Amino acid sequence: MKRIIIIGGGPAGLMAATQLLKSDCEILLLDQKASVGRKFLVAGDGGFNLTHSESKTELLEKYDSVWIKQAIRKFSNKDFIQFLNRIGIETKVGSSGKIFPEDEIKPIQVLNAWKQHLEPKVQFRLNCRLVNFSETAIEVEENGKTGQIPFDCLVLALGAKSWPVTGSDGVWTTLFEEKGIQINPFRASNSGLELYDNWLGDLEGKILKNVVLSCGDQRCAGDVVCTSYGLEGKPAYAINRALSKMEKPVFKIDFKPQMTQQRVVEILKKAKNPSQGLKELKLGEVAVFWIKNFVSKARFTDPKELAKAIKEFAVGIKGFRPLEEVISCAGGVADSEISESGELNRFPNVFVAGEMIDWDAPTGGYLIQGCVSSGYVAGKSIARAFDSVQSPQ
Image (cartoon, rainbow, N blue to C red; front, side, top):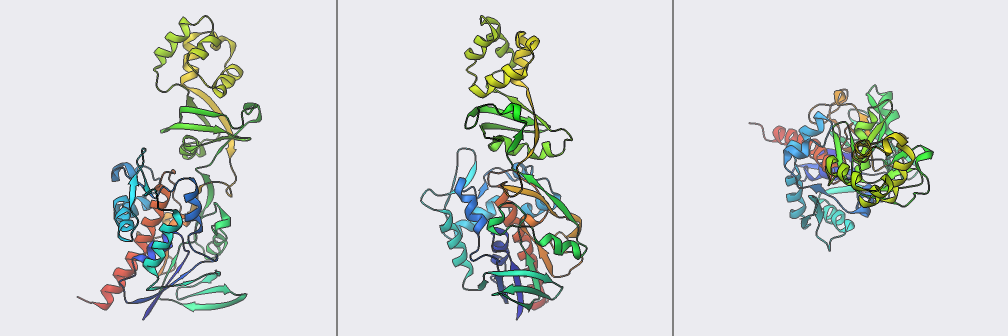
């Protein structure tokens, strides 16, 4: 019987295993932690977005990699929702289109249902760390000892470098580089924005409500929270990709997206002075502080220029948060190193999946969707190859 080894018990590894359940093979799923799905559970702490309900066209626009887009075409958000339903996880659509488990279902219940679906066929080996691999065997460290396990196919779903406490520590990159596999440097994604000190003031904990942040062709509405170092929140995360491409990153804030610029001008003109105009516009404390400190006197006293500043307020950042703190990171195995099925060009029968491949997407269910789609592609490719060998035409 052929043996398939999957290393990494996150959604990519679990989905790869799922696609092999009907194949006549032995499946070993290894993880270096004492339990699988740790990052999957951490993602559930802030609202468990499993995927998003939008159309496939809209969904694909959220990803920056041709490879991951192809994977999502093969296993879409609708496919994932159907799979969850089959294992007993009912889902609902949130107000912003995100897909959540039904209210009474906790993240651990989703993970347990998935594990139970796999357990009749899949053997889980935990506290087992990858040391090396070849085309036919892996070397692992387990219980203080190292040993080799042969395989017919190997799926590596080792994660990236965000939230390393969950097992995504990026240590594998050294091994890959030693084998001549191109690794694009990891970079923060869905990260908080670090502002220069003079922007911070006494604003920690204050919220910019109902604003729009934009950079290049990326734009996102919502609330942004001021921290001791800068800004956090979905709109800040959503413009990471555009900011990371700039030598001197700058984004814009629309403090009054519900009003046209002309309407803002009218309100400012009617006010007895600019400060009163800001009050009548009901701008929050953060917006008022920044406008009064960073808009020149000439612009502040000109209603048209002040209105433009309110609608297109420019903010420069000094950087992103450390990789260990961010929700996700881009970078990893370059597209050029893998086939359409995720197989490594240099190592036949060795596949990669999940965040260890270089792709990027915003929060809101897109990250988990990308992982499960890539795991599907690897697992399904192996299953089809095995089935065609066992049942020749």
